[in-house]
Each structure stands twice: as C-alpha cells, then as structure tokens.
Amino acid sequence: MTQITSDDATREHVSITDADVEAAHGLLEFIQACPSMFHTAQTIARRLDDAGFTRLREGDAWSVEPGSCCYVVRNNSSVIAFKVGEGATDSGRFHFQLSATHGDSPTFKVKDVATLDGPEGGLRLNVEAYGGMIDYTWFDRPLSLAGRVFVQVDERVESRLVSLDRPVAMIPSLAIHLDRSMNDAFSPNRATDVCPLVSAGLMDEATFDRLVADAAGVEPEQVLARDLFLVNLQQPCVWGAEHEFISSPKLDDLMCAYVSLEAFLEARNTAAVSVYCCFDNEEVGSNTKQGAMSTFLPDVLVRLSAALGAGEEGYRRALAKSMLVSCDNAHAVHPNHPERYDASNRCRLNGGLVVKEAANQHYCTDAFSRAVLAAVCRRAEVPLQTFANRSDMAGGSTLGNLSNIQASMHAVDVGCPQLAMHSSYETAGTRDVTLATKALKAFFEADLRIVEADAVDIA
Ligand code: ZN
Image (cartoon, rainbow, N blue to C red):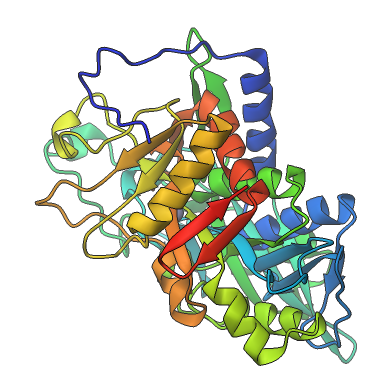
C-alpha cells in the first residue's frame, strides 16, 4: 500500500505515455456509447459478444461448464458476466472473484407528461432529478435525450433504445442583470429553475412526442411508455500540456465499469469463476429489482453453482472462499480545497487505484480485504492509494456493502481518483485508466485461496 499525502516529497511523477493516452481514449469512446444506463448495458453486452461470450436469459434453462464464458442482463440495465476457469470446480477450490460497478449516473428524467407550456409560446421539458447531481453544471450547455421507450407493434409491446444524439434542450441561466445575487448564492429550484427549454414557439407536446417516436422508428401513438434522461453532449477530451487529465460526463462510474471490464476480459484464471458486474440504480440507492441490493447477483451465482454441480451447499461454501472488489470512483484532492480532505488518507490524480475505507462500514473494506488486495497489487507491482473521509464529515457510500446484503463475502471498496464527482462533466487522471486496469487484472488473475478470515494464499 502506498500512502500519498499532500506534502509527500518522495512522490514519484511518471510521464503520461502514448499507451496511457490510448487507453484513456478507449474509455472515452466507451462513455460516448453509453448515454443512458440502458445503453451502458447494451455497450457492455456488445463487448462481451465480441469476446465470444454467450448471453443467458434468466427465463431459460442454463447450461454452464468449466471453460464457459456467459453473461446475463436484467431490465436491460444491469449486466453480470462470468468466466468459469477450466479448473474452477476442482477438489474444493470452487469460488468466485468478482468486481462490481454501476452503469447509471446522476441526471434528470423526463416525466410522463413531458412538457411545460410557455411562457410566451415556448415549451420546456418537465424533468425530475435522478440521483444527487451538482445542479448548476447542467445549465448553459447543449443537452440531448436518451433512454428506452416501449412501443406497441400489433399485439406485442417491445423495448427500443433511443438516443437523439443531437442538441435538443438547454437550461439557460438567468442573466446576472436580473439577479445580482447569482454569484453569492446560486441555489436553483428543481421545479422552477431546472426546466430545459426545447422550443421558442415552433413546437408543441405533439411535436415532442413525434421527436421521440422518430428516434424509436415508430409512430407517436405506438409509444406507450418511456424512461428518458437528459444527456450532456459536451465531448470528452484528454487535456493538459502533458496530457495528464481526462474530462467527460459520467466518469462516475463508467470509468470503473470500463477498466474492470477490460481487466476481466484480459485476465486468465483457470482456478476461479471470474465475475464482472455492472449494476443500475446505484445513484438512487440500489434497492431496485436490478440494483446491487437486489437478488440479481445471488440469483446468477446460485444458478451458476447448480449448473456446475455444486448445488446449494457448494454455493455457500464457494461464497466463504470468494472476494468482491467493489469499484466506484473516489475523490481526489481538489487543488483549491485540500482542507476538505483527511490530512493523510487522501489520493491524487494519476496515482493509481484508491482503496476506500470508513469505520461506519459505508465502504465494505476491512483489514482482511485490504490486505488481500494490497498483497495482490504488491506482487503485480501496481500502486494503490488510500482514501478516508475527514473524521468530521459523513462522506458518500457505494454498492459493495449493499451487494453484500444478498451475497455476503469478503469485499473491498476501491475506485479511480477523480474531481468534480456528480458534475455533469467530471475530471480524472489519464494514467489512472492504465493503473486501475492493471490492478484489477492482477486481482482477477490471482489464484486466491481464502481460509475464512484467517489467511489467504496467493499464487
Ligand atoms: Zn459512483
């Protein structure tokens, strides 16, 4: 474990390489393909298809054997993929090595009756908050819409993903001349201030319905329901004189969703069942049918165990030997506000994956799980950083401890360091894409032999 502090004189500064920039561009392209959580699941599924994985339907019988690579999607917004090592069921070794991330990000959701009339003939969208965003970051920038709609085709109702892929809305600021207090206390009201403008008078509710129907390739009367969200269209970029930074919408948590997917796909481990999870609804508490607190993960693991001949007893025994790495981005020290962070347990951009720990167990890290990950990363010569909240601040929470309610096992919370979490445009370190992928690949490849909470052998 490498401990980084703000006055760490021995800190190593490593140049950003062409390979780092290329890896970062891979992430940014992935994010561009994920304008909503439904697109995130689809993008991950396509990547798995390309890698030769087989999609299993929850409503069908499953056939799984050593060597199988499969994935399951729930609600078209959460994905669990697994690779069964050829020797995964050998003599009492059966266990899981998992990563978990989330594919949703804070945004605004369009209500059923989508528009607000006026004033002066204009048309605005009627939206409500999905998650806890920094509201002002949604103002004065081109916005689009993406999500899914359900359409009726004859006697069948079916899901269609939609993404308008062009600017159709904007939340304009009020001019400084009309509110001189704007720079003192900007506190937008979500019912009256956060109403995206979609027309100055040429459009009505029917035209909006037509816009959505066209995107779905149907007539407006065929659209029965929609889950549509605002999308910040500002393009992601690698920036800085030394290419040190990446900025993009949705780095929380698509950065972890991407690096853990790359690590999962690259890693080889014949002795374990490697599992990749990307859950929906972390930003609204995870307690949905497809969230980290749902039965999705145990449903998959139990059925997978049964298909491999392990049964209920085998599943329980496997959990006792398993470990989860819960990956959700962490707060890097803000250059203008270092006082908001713990004086010594804090992290920086481009310093590598961050282990997050909290005494109140809002992070699932404990000494056992931290020790396992530290040993794995030491062996792979990949740096780890550390994060804890200031002792007088509550801090955030994530999905590891929630997923542990349904499938309890050793678990550690990690994330990539980033700035401006829950802004509509966030910033992270270019090199952290490479470093986090390496750390997670080392975890997936480690031959872990966990002996309850007593010890672990790592080969
Ligand atoms: Zn997150």
